[in-house]
Image (cartoon, rainbow, N blue to C red; front, side, top):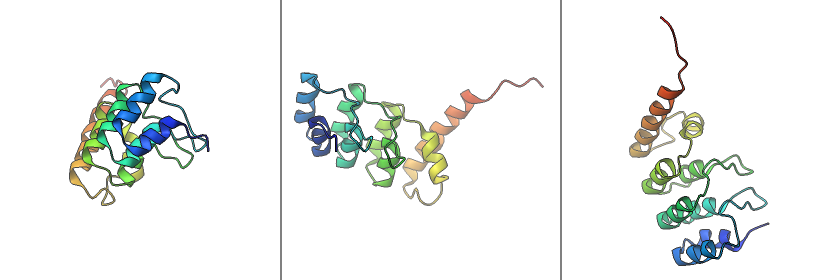
Length: 136
């Protein structure tokens, strides 16, 4: 499975355990299991905003794609995790909202309007900076 103790700590959502393994430095916070999931995926799945924040603060990447094609942000949306976790992935982790907007087409599959609005707002900002320069 390739799961490390840092993955287990993320899965448990226990902040003290995560901090212990991060401080020991035995594992990179972006270490991948055989499923290509990092400890951040496990922290998201645990539902612990504190665990997610600790990993993000210590350099966890949000652009990692699991063998199932999910990023931590997509997993958080699919698992129905708290708005706070989703906000943290987008703001602290700079998660790419494009994939979420494309996958869900900003439709009723995203039933929580606060999350939909957050994705739309971030998507607009992303699109503003990516538009090619045009001479009129």
